Length: 455
Image (cartoon, rainbow, N blue to C red; front, side, top):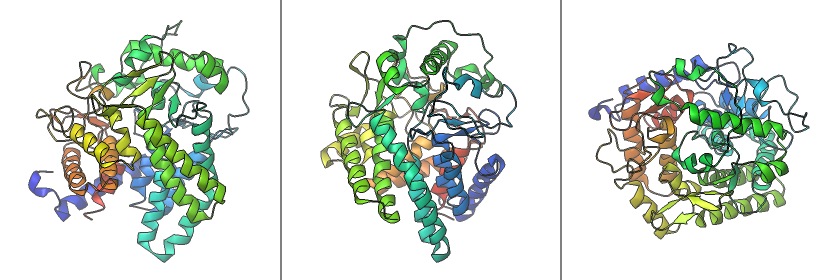
């Protein structure tokens, strides 16, 4: 989309239809695969973003996306990061369901037809569920009752999910979520984790094929073999504990307070509170959710680094912050309810040469890792490329903060970027080259939400 075309009704309508076609192709009948080849299963936070996009096409189908995911919720409230597609070709993804089986059967693991992983991902789901309701409100009376019934059915599951994260994943009561594996944050090979991963002693890991390398142009776009050794070793350690949370906290070598996950949870608690009020949840639920939101924002304040004007993750094993400039550092912007001073500091950093203001960028969009970091790599997954889904999250956060002009400028640049590729997974920040998988569902989904303002 050339500059003069931005906002053009015809161009927007054509892109809208192309994005809708991606979701139709990836629709598996009640749930959506993340991508046609590289990601043939249902991913947790992908589905939340997908529901946001689907709401612009079909409110009922958007609700179904979330309901199907939560049908596979564990008994302790955890929403698994992958729900496996039993019809996917054998070996189409690095780890199949057999790799996630607990060493000893666990009462927490659901006895469902679809098998799951044992990790989780950021809790975007309440935000997505509220989006479904808000779009139904825009549609009018006929959509309201089904949407209200959807919220009433999903609310107890959302509440249990948030309670799990704020108890089992935060026994300290810090307001910050503890992750057990880089895959749980969704930013797999980000340099955020390099230091904490380097301290993990890896045992024997069986040789394996890398199916992901069949679907990208070059290996530099994906995590390295050394990174995968650590990822797989951490999975083995978790399955050996049968996902016992107390044992994991006692013995697991990778425990990190993740500021991005925690910020999304704080914002999701705000959405959950609105849902609780809509469905008439007990007053004690609302009081607890409100306390969760406040606790999360307090926790993020404790992670603030005034030298960089960013938030940093905290390595619990080493008991120190992980000072790497990535998009996760804008966690307080995502969490919301900032003081004017803190908001100004974050915006100054966001639009500085360390991020969106870098003059080498093809479009002024947030690279996943700052180009000024030594470990930045423009093609390597979360070590530099621009992810449209993260651009959406920053855009959404700017709008909530009242920064409408900055949000509009970011949206315009993001749509220009998407016009350069077939809804790719991520983009080279300097050239704009589409990277990773094409036909990525959550990329198409956020495009639909952006484009809903034009169509």
